[in-house]
Amino acid sequence: MKCPFCGHREFKVTDSRNASEMNAIRRRRECLDCQKRFTTFETVDAAVQVRKRDNKVEDFQIDKLNRGVGAACRHTRVGHEQVLQISSEIAQELLDRGEKEISTTDIGTIVMDRLKRLDTIAYIRFACVYKRFKELDELISAIQSVDETKEEYANAPN
Image (cartoon, helix red, strand yellow):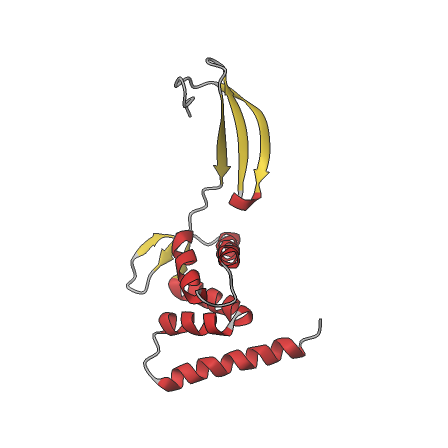
């Protein structure tokens, strides 16, 4: 790493803090040459690969997850902050698994489980795109599964 001001390669860390919203460590650094200060963020590079339906593999991108969940939640009671929180939790779950590769099927299932508990409309929207329903019976079955899930949660001991 180089100082962004003078290009010198030696500096000292003057402050370190958790940047939990970014899952990173924020460090204030001071260049030993020009004495100017700057901030860096350190994150873990634990890349997860996603195997798509066509068998292509690409890096997991939380932005894609945000867009998919966000589209399903648009005009529902699920706000933008909740969408970001859901995506962040799912990304963390994927990292915690310790697997280098995950299928879009697994990711879709995780998203649907979260949305099913959170908002029926968001779940149905996501399921329609993800499962690619071709028959009305498939949609009706998905709606009924939401009702069954709600009953399970209502009857579950606290």
